[in-house]
Image (cartoon, rainbow, N blue to C red; front, side, top):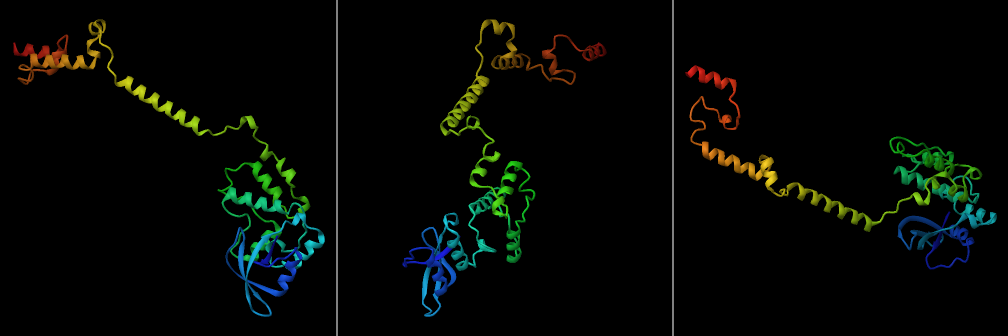
Length: 266
C-alpha cells in the first residue's frame, strides 16, 4: 500500500493521507527522493504546486478502521482494484510476482491494454509458457502457484512458504560453497601438471650404450645422423639412372622386380 505525503509537512499519522487527497491533486512524477518516488502536486483551491513523496505502509500492521481510511483515500492504487482486506498474505502475493519475474524475465500479468491486464490480475490468470519455463522444476512452479492465489485466505503464509519443499530440497552439508582461493589453487596445479607433461614429451631420453645398441633408430638425433651418413656415402650413386632405386639403400633383400630387371640386362 502507498500514500502521498508533502515534503516538509509533518503528518502525525496515516489519517493525514485522507486529508491530503481532499486538498491536493496528484500530477506527473518529477523524480525520486530518498528511496521513494516524488510527484508534482497542485492545491485544489489555490493552485499552488508542491513536491510529493510516496512512502510505503505495511497493511499487516493496520486495523480494520485504518484500512478503510486508506482504501477511501487511495482508490487510484492498482493494489486496491476491488477492496483492501489487510490479510497477512498480501505481501506474499508480491513475493510470488517477484519470483515469477526473476525466473521468467517477464511479469506474470501483462497485456498491452491496461484494462485487460487489470482483469488478468483480479482473476489471477497467468501461465508458465515455453521456453522460459521448460527448464524450471515443478517444485518452484508449485510454490509460485500457491503464492499467486487471488483469495488471501487460501494463499500461503510466510511460515508455510518457508516450509515448502523448494526451500528444503538441499541439505546444508550437500551445498558446495564457492571458494576463490581453492579454485585458484586448483587452476595453478592443473597448469603446472600440463607444463610438466609437455616438458616430459619433448625432453630427450637419456642415451645409454644398451639403448644405442638395441634400437638406435628409435632415437631422433641418432636417426638423423644415420640417414645423413648413409646419403653422404651413397650420394654419388643415388638416382644416377632410371633403373636405380633410392629405396635400395635401406633394403636387406632385393625385390623381385629389381631381380627381373637385372636378368633382362644380362
